[in-house]
Image (cartoon, rainbow, N blue to C red; front, top):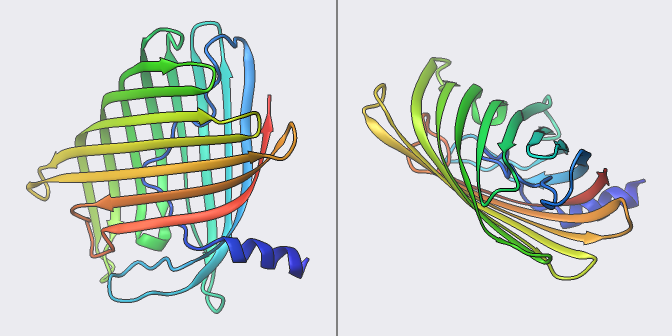
Length: 262
């Protein structure tokens, strides 16, 4: 067991709880209907996650994703969840997580529609809770056997609560534009690459300024068998104006195993 844990830690560098997530990672081919599908993956993390900009602390922890979707004849319903537990090795465990639900209406059309909702928390960065709801348009530019390319344009309402380092609670709510580009590449029967890039922005009356957020993610999968993948993930996130004094840029590189069903 110690040897297996060591292997995981050698390949796991840094990780971060993404404020924006890859919402189409369990999407099926358009000709599949009335079908359940999903992923369950677990990763061990060794990372330098820190809430403040003037210090770095090494953490170890466990990262788990559970994604479930159902594709009907015309629509697709997806629930994506992520939970992380980590510690410095000398203190208590800290947790982060989110649950995201999304419906892709008229999913087989070149132009389809999306509605979504999410709840999130991140104790490691002092985000107490975040709620958001929104809707948008999804455009399919390319849908071939070995490649997919999508773009999404939408609007969402976001409400969040942060705690600064003096213990003061800060409440923010605003309407944001949310936009993304997503591409999937299937190089052969065993190797797959998924990418997504998000840009979100909105004006906060509370802070009297625009808040900009950029997030990118890359998932590289190697198929071990019909149900099991080896998964390498990289994420990069930039917050132009953090609500409290935390790092503007955070990144992640982690490795683990992914179990597929459906």
